[in-house]
Amino acid sequence: MRIAIAAADTDQLALLSAAARRQSPEITASLAATLREAGQLDAALVVLHNAYLRHPEDFWLNYELAECSLAADDADE
Image (tube, rainbow, N blue to C red; front, side, top):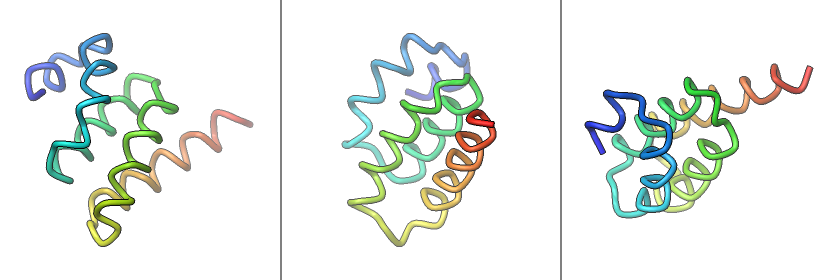
């Protein structure tokens, strides 16, 4: 996962999104940030929503969820 994040390999990141449930909140937030930066907001929001259900208190998941939500709002305008 770290290699795909570092390389911003969007195809590999999309595959890893399905496996995000087994990752720590920190890794999941990093994956979502990379997806957001690559323009894959829908995938990032799905990953974050699923992680939020398991870790609602995690600061970085909440932060990235807010960032993705703002980016999605900007994209809609």
